[in-house]
Length: 363
Image (cartoon, rainbow, N blue to C red):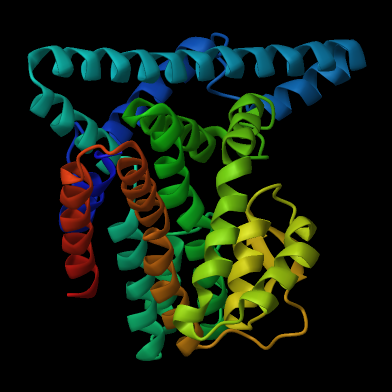
């Protein structure tokens, strides 16, 4: 798919521009509007869970269950409103661009896909934490880790900040790179934007806290379903590319097959276990969310704590894995052109773009 190469180049050159009309920010604004419309009047005050508890005290368990179901239904309607609007708008815009000119369609599809991937931002966030821990600035490391994760970071040690960043880079490699490229390959740029909407809604609503325990349930389940294949694909790509940082594919696969399903998340455990096996470090352990300490199962329990050098390895590995989908698409185009006797010009153009991508990555 020709969109992939210019999209990755755009992302690596410009990252996520902090502009109001960025698609992800528009999705976020739409989500807030749909949430206000879907919730019952006056529900922005007490939280969902508290309302359920109060109703249970007054009217018993049946009223409590009904309140919970209404909150789930409201969240489902809001989710469908956002996802449907994003999908319809993306398809309409791309078709309109195609009618205008093929180059307009190429530009529109590339921009749509570039706004859905986050290779540059993922590396930038990780490097900020790396710089802080290299300078033994724990306070700054905590601040930068807090930009990447939903857990509380105020009590993190230097080693804890490194571990949290390794876990976040591995998970976000799936969410921010592999998943949008995967959906772009099978559904086009509109599929990548739809995935980004699903992922954004989970980031906004998919919490097990008082406000979103019920309202965010559909968003959380949809995100779990959307990431089921990409998370496992990311783990496979990490296993394949881990020799780039001196890792053992056999060891990485062993940890994935043994530990990936230990994670509380149905998907995050796969790229995290692959990263643990690829670098030979232990991930998981205790983490604090909304004031609650949660003990996460260890991934790679036989390995040592992550060190600064391991964070460098994971950041390098993330860049290497980002080449996986483009290389697969390039190889597919080349083989198809060779078998069918078609022109190799599109493949050569794609290859030139890929080398340009390599120059940006390594420059």
